[in-house]
Image 1 (cartoon, helix red, strand yellow):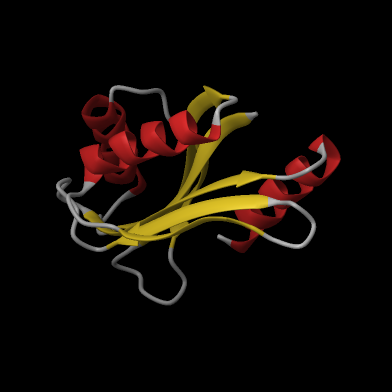
Image 2: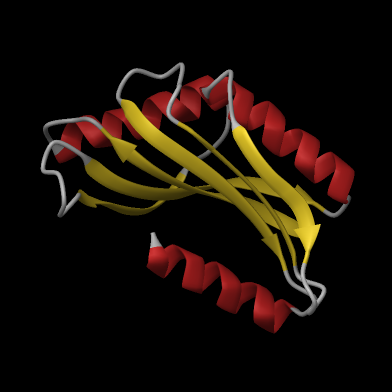
Length: 134
């Protein structure tokens, strides 16, 4: 089951309040609910906010999940560099994309990931690890 899309982005905003407004803008543009996981000033560049969030997917069919992800991604940008979908030796499945050419003013860089592991235990661990790395 593909429950969510995990997003990692850098927002070019001066304040946390403006970053929150940009999250609301993403909800409006994508017509979906955003769950914010992290929003903090980027330590390497103080003009950016490092933001991680999820959007719901709730789809068990791989083809439909990929299509739904691409439709949502297209709401944010016309052009994406996409990797996958592919499986590894443990039968874990991944699909991701990255862009700097967004339709939404204030998004400097954004990527998405869909991860589906063979076991639910590994699924949670993979999601948590990826969120920590963002």
